[in-house]
Length: 179
Image (tube, rainbow, N blue to C red; front, side, top):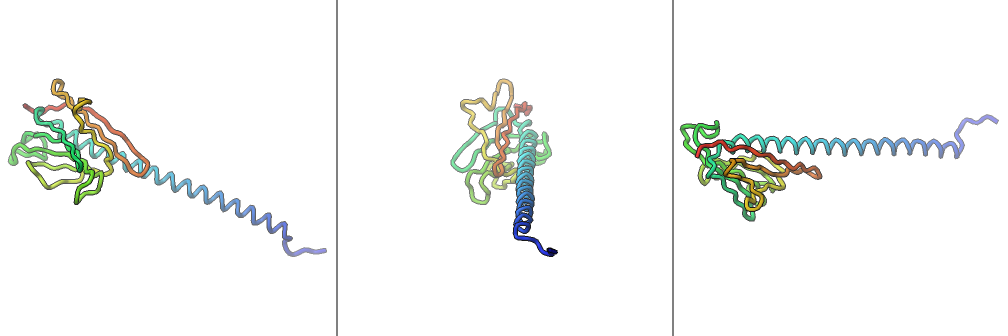
């Protein structure tokens, strides 16, 4: 007897093998997509943390030690200090001394939640977003001694988050501004 077609059993086996191969490829694709998303989130969080830390370290290093203030209310968390003219390019000789502010937005019109902003000038309303995704910014200076006037050391502490990726950042800088 000459057969030219597949039997039902052979057809079922071929379909099962094909379904298994499709399932394996689908699982691999889903895993690779998730991995790529996680790596992108991690790169984003690291980049934002580096930008914020670099900016804050560069500016606050030249703060006048007696002018560092930490403020927290329902909508924002702020740190601000006076910077003498001529110490950094953002505060030029022609402008004179400036108060520089950093704030984490909790809830405020014109900003996304967790934006991290910078402004200079007394009562400034021109805020520049320098980072996003800051879910924690430590401005509580009562119990944990973020600012030590004796040693002139300032501890900066915040957390940057995107989706499920969070990176806590902490550094200590020596404040070198003149009294």
